[in-house]
Image (cartoon, rainbow, N blue to C red; front, side, top):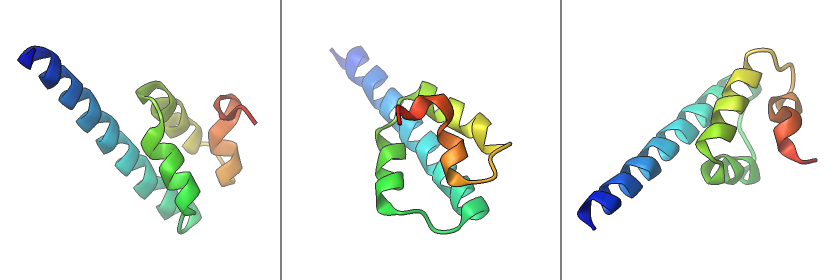
Length: 72
């Protein structure tokens, strides 16, 4: 039980740290982010955060960051 909780906490902390870093990077490149974007990032999976982080390198607009993962 404790091991399961520790894994869950570790996963959650990692995801929160990755989301926070991506929020800072996006804000630095594109300016202040709408709260909806910040919430989207905080709810994202680690795989989505990784993909968006890589997309950020070549993106010329915030919309380009989402790439194919956006579902839009």
